Image (cartoon, rainbow, N blue to C red):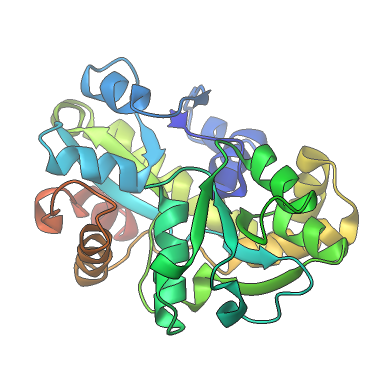
Length: 288
């Protein structure tokens, strides 16, 4: 099972592994960190079984890759706009440098949509590509940029250091599903029972995370080497972004991809009904 980064965006699969949820269903799952185009190629070729980068998988499917999205675990990314103390509100960002991991990435799209919903022309912002989370944090900390899009725990840590959080992806009117489960279409036909076990674990990980608050806070604290207060904040913020039933409506998904295409963040339109299949998820939810 591939994931793109050691990030809270994929916390549910780390929990599924380390809380024994995969083993509970007799699944021997290896988590592999893979970024860029590599996981799409590997999944299409059958070299890996599952991809958790939901948006990436669906864009590839719309361009002909034999892939299907089966379940959404995060309806919005855990992204937060954090700025230097002199920036009091989003309007103050006009003409300022704003760090994202990569021009054209989901971070870049979220930042641009956020600014537009606040009545700010994104073209007035100087977006700076840093290449990695650590570079983004360093750029903001050293004053090379005035603001940055950060995920947990980095947003909480920077706020503790005196920086100001002035926005969050959760404020956006459109859902931005970032993580879930994407598989090769051939696997749906040949191994649907095993896929349903994996879907069940994904749902169980959400339920476990909601129920076992202290376990989760301690887990986040240990994994990211945080103090208890920061870990608790990261956990609460992450929890609010989840999709407990594994779904975002097809209309909401279509709205998201239409926005992405309208902002020229993806190369071609995505017809959502052609790349999503909730059939196995519905069977699991029905207890089948």
